[in-house]
Length: 342
Image (cartoon, rainbow, N blue to C red; front, side, top):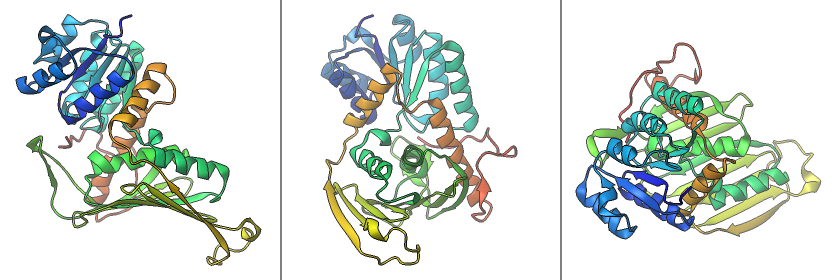
């Protein structure tokens, strides 16, 4: 099998990050597809893709390069369902699709089922498990320094829930082993327009996800917050405070001799440790997702993407019911509702 059996659909900013990750893995792109001539030509020149292998339509590229080792889909969410099915039909062994996974829950289900029937690996580019700050937190939690994690609390600038906030749902699952079972949501301000087109928009606000274990994920990503990205993890014995932009983690935890004291004794003697980490770019985590996907080990798969889209979709249902706490998986959920996410 040739190392050039990698096909890229989408030559925008994220497409370029994927292309760089592919190159760093020692692979190369056989072909690129994008509706915009200038985008696919720029990608072709930078990554040595022959003019004859630069396509405007995915169908033509997949017909010219059947049975690819890997297809990377870096387009808007409304195209993912059709493109994944087309890649499967072309014999793709593995597919990495950008997030959000799709524009509806039903589309996600269809993508998972299609790939399962064909034996195609489907990965979704939720990268948190491969970012240094989350690996650090996972290590600290596994070592028991904080005891059992109670809550993960994100306070950040104005992030769209589907485009950026959804990453934290994956991180919550990575760190706790649990998926949210319930949600209460409140959108603030106007929808966030997307530069990809007026038909696309996302929303920020305040969102509370609760797992059956009782562990919570709180996202405070309102429209009127213009800076920063911090995450506080609160456990039985202490906190971890992560400044993602600064690359700093502060850990405070009860001294072990005082762990038996009641939770209400919040000022018991403690130890404090500061860690530094390199703020991650898009390329390195994407590279590790690709590497895991190709190995078939510990990658964010289609079922991960489905769980995340299901949770995000139910945020809209909760917000439309005056932020009522509702179950995420329930028979009356409108899984066919199509959202305008990019």
